[in-house]
Length: 158
Image (cartoon, rainbow, N blue to C red; front, side, top):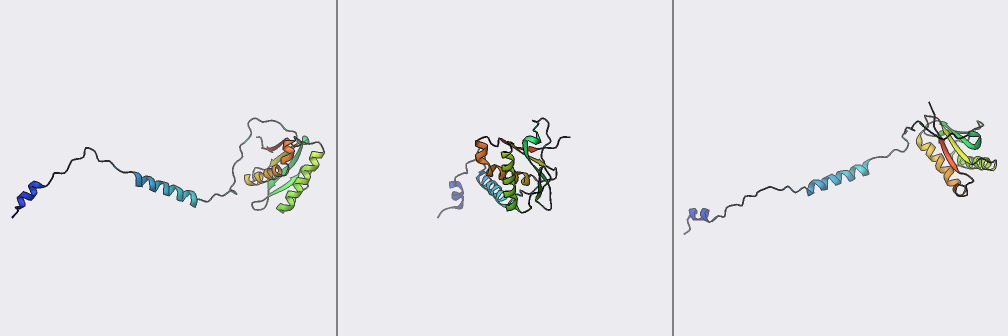
């Protein structure tokens, strides 16, 4: 028969660790899962108004050498567009696109080689970008052949 005291004597003592190391792999996994969740769940709102910086120094561009499109805050998110003469473009986007292309084409034929977008301070940046992209897409070949050399965005000086 084995004595209880002999069992205790045979038990191996635990090794003492010099330093306890922590496994941070699960914490890194959770961090990346949270990051992915917030990137996927966040909503980007391109209609929010951004601030256009004020000009400190700039190149003076003559309006008489440019096809000028005046952009003013309109109803809702859309901007009201007009020519330098005051004639307004249509509020329908498809009609507006064809009118802008026709207007810039006429101005290019008249010897102008710039497009100037003059915007009101309350116009949303997305609208200015939309009009600039519209002109860039319609006249991509003209930019390459230097018929249309630049599109400028006019900023208000104080």
